[in-house]
Image (tube, rainbow, N blue to C red; front, side, top):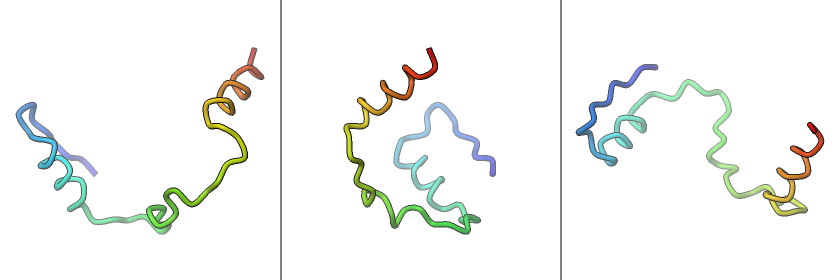
Length: 54
């Protein structure tokens, strides 16, 4: 998929261009947004995981 956007294109126009594209995804993840509950703060998790690389 290729969308050409000019500098003068507004935010709502860009949003409409993206939403009008046909979805080819087999898994629609939008229904699961906000459903997963983590046992720890997301920032603490990122810091812990990134410290493993050092």
